Length: 241
Ligand code: MG
Image 1 (cartoon, rainbow, N blue to C red):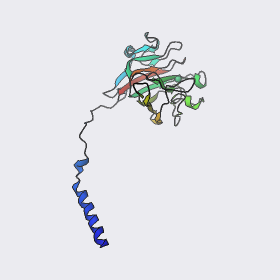
Image 2 (cartoon, protein in one colour; image 1 turned 45 degrees about the horizontal axis):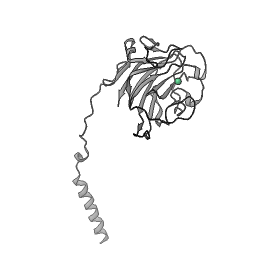
Image 3 (tube, rainbow, N blue to C red; image 1 turned 60 degrees about the vertical axis):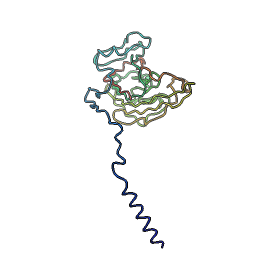
Image 4 (cartoon, helix red, strand yellow; image 1 turned 90 degrees about the vertical axis):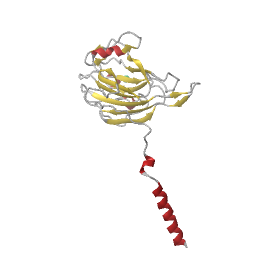
């Protein structure tokens, strides 16, 4: 009797499996848009180029609203003593590619050596710093989410060499009453090495004090930091997600 029961269960399982077809689990609901991948200095076909050469300085303004006083040639270079610059266009969830270079001639140490920064939404900083054999507090070195997350590893190239950041950012969500519905998340790949793996931001990145969210717009400008060091940028492109 027991054997017969087991036999029947196996038959039922088999017949049930036989009712299912491969097509039942195929999803035809959304065809992915065709995108031509990045090639050399050519961004992916659906990316917005933010800096590819001098003419792209038009896409940026100084934080006080004036024209950027940074040196804008084939590459974009911080002029110490000027201001942070930000994009005219506003962004929320993005994929961002940035190439940066700290000065070849080493001047200063710690936070004073090749310091700049990439502020998603103008508020959330991925640190840019010459962290090649240059110690500072670990949540303030290159690739840190400033004062919030230490990078997993230090993938810095020597000063004077070009480096890449590929950043994947999810903007925070807020309720009508200003409450936080979902925090911001960020992933950073530095020179092809994963250094921040979908880490949660605790609020805007601050120099002093504990971070705390305050409701802001769904989209805001991308900001680059003037931190008294002549750091250069090139081939900056962004994809809205
Ligand atoms: Mg900085």
